[in-house]
Length: 412
Ligand SMILES: O=P(O)(O)OC[C@H]1O[C@](O)(CO)[C@@H](O)[C@@H]1O
Image (cartoon, rainbow, N blue to C red; front, side):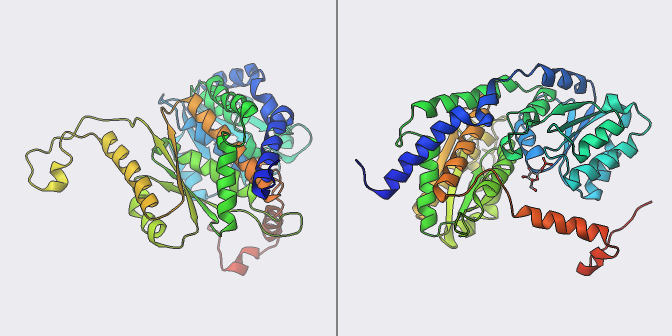
């Protein structure tokens, strides 16, 4: 019997994950019928533009998945904020008669999403609303369902037993995926592939467990930031999705009130080599790096530079942009290693719906494993409620914004 405490924790965490696979709704629903979602998606595919309202887990999964959209239409606009300037800019570019609007909110009570929806309903008031709008929310009574009922808007159910940040494989991610023409079944298959491997895994060959254990051990040594460096623009939104998943799941107090968690950070290669890398290599040794790379980068025609003298140009001669990207991703990994920074590479042979599904499921499992190791509940987010209540309180009090010196510009 192994008496090393970390080995024991590892074994318990693996058993926890393997049990979750057979019990947790998130994993059970991966083979659910998607006919109703596909039908709604077919309807929305007729539009030129589709606005997807919602925030956090009701938006980020869809954003990460639809980054793989190949077709130009319909154009999807994920509006996940309440910056009226951005909202107005998008509204200027779309014609209500040619645009569908989908509002997603698990709880149905999120102020930001409700404000977005109420704003759109006014703009679309000369269109048949039931044709243009769709509401996705959990069953039962809530604010967004009251709006749906008042305006006779069609609805789809968000599963009530799958939390927002874990919902990318449900209607929340699948509906945008189908609208964008992405093969949602393959995406789910990628997730199922990872679960099948987990069922057979040991503590030594479960990538999710090994990833969580590495980060758990490092965070005992005050390495409490987790940088996800993506070398592919289409994976930048995956990094945003990952940040919410990780932050809301592991960043909280444990049963005896001790603050736990590591801070997720997004970095985009090669761009952020010219912005953040200096700090990463030379600054505080408090970061763990995951470099997400592609084995094959997209390539345009090779550059012609043999008629120049400067070595910065001649080095590029006959080389493609994809080759430069591959060289840079390798160089970043090796430089991090050379500077004794803890780093791992997650390499995708190809970026497809199936490989993306596998990657997302890997991160979900790694997050659940980390929460188990830290002894926190991965499924709640108690601390954010305080700010939500206060914001509504300020909103309802006249002059509340002035307290912070903020002003609201009202445009007629
Ligand atoms: O889907 P909902 O209920 O609108 O919530 C949106 C997001 O808000 C949060 O509750 C945090 O504020 C997230 O956990 C969630 O993904």
